[in-house]
Length: 119
Image 1 (spheres, rainbow, N blue to C red):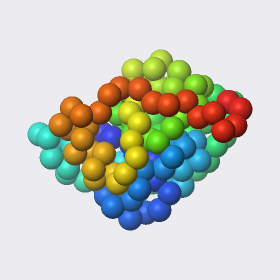
Image 2 (tube, rainbow, N blue to C red; image 1 turned 90 degrees about the vertical axis):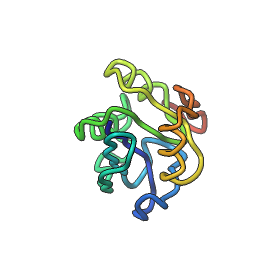
Image 3 (cartoon, one colour; image 1 turned 120 degrees about the vertical axis):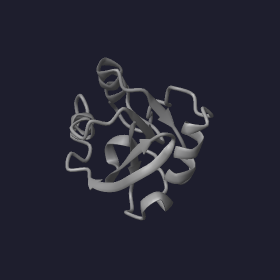
Image 4 (cartoon, rainbow, N blue to C red; image 1 turned 180 degrees about the horizontal axis):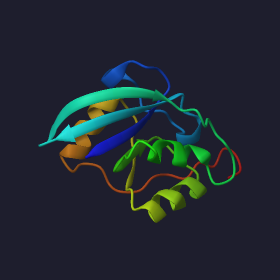
């Protein structure tokens, strides 16, 4: 399992999950094996809110992620992830807590659509 988590500051697992997928500064890429964190790496989001169709989706998918955790996400991005078969989860808190909750099956698939601007 490879999880992509939206973050604004590179503080590793202590980073707070970014409230908006397309505007995050980094994607925290987390490799999970046998239910344990094996590696983490923060990658810059080089497509910060690319607009129509959310170019950031393609950016994070290029890292072969299997799951995404973010605070919120526009409908265009949600549809692109659905088309790629990548489940998305909404979370508020640290990346580490989000991973623990995901591994404990305490997160529900789905995410709130961003409504503070047009998508």
